[in-house]
Amino acid sequence: MGLRNSGKSSILEYFQGIRNLVLFGNIKPTVHIDRVIYQAVDYEHLIWDFGGQIDYLSDYLEQFYEYAYEADEIIYVIDIQDQEKYNPSINFLKKIIKLLVDKELYIDIKVFLHKFDPDLDHTHPEINEEVIINLLKDVKNIFSDNISYSIFKTSLYVDFKKYQIIG
Image (cartoon, rainbow, N blue to C red):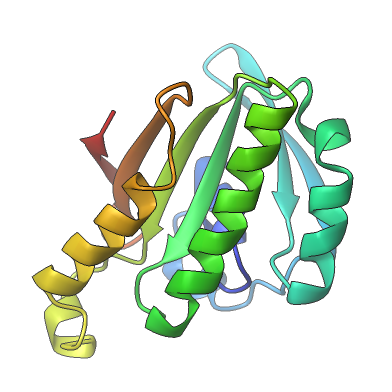
């Protein structure tokens, strides 16, 4: 889950074995929800890729229990290269967390601070250490003690990497 253009579908493609970065440029925005099943190490994964367009977000929240009641985890993606979406993205995540608490759903949340790409300091010099520290604080502040979460820096460049920061 996450807002539009955060990289959700690209991450899903990568999980399924797509490694050619050129192909990621051809990914079309997800329309509403795509369900994808793929096999990885003797385990079948069913992943719901939620389109992040504003028009869909309220529908997801209204029907959240239907989507989440059998989920093992939620991967929430924030595009760190788009500072204008930090607050809307955090607000949407806050609503998701409130629904989890209200419905007493104990689902692990992984927050991917995505597009933490090589040469970020050259391509987006405005995204400095202070900006990232503040974003981390804002994300951490929305979690209560009874929600299991982890935060990762992620990038598809070179090889998908996630580095656990919290949790």
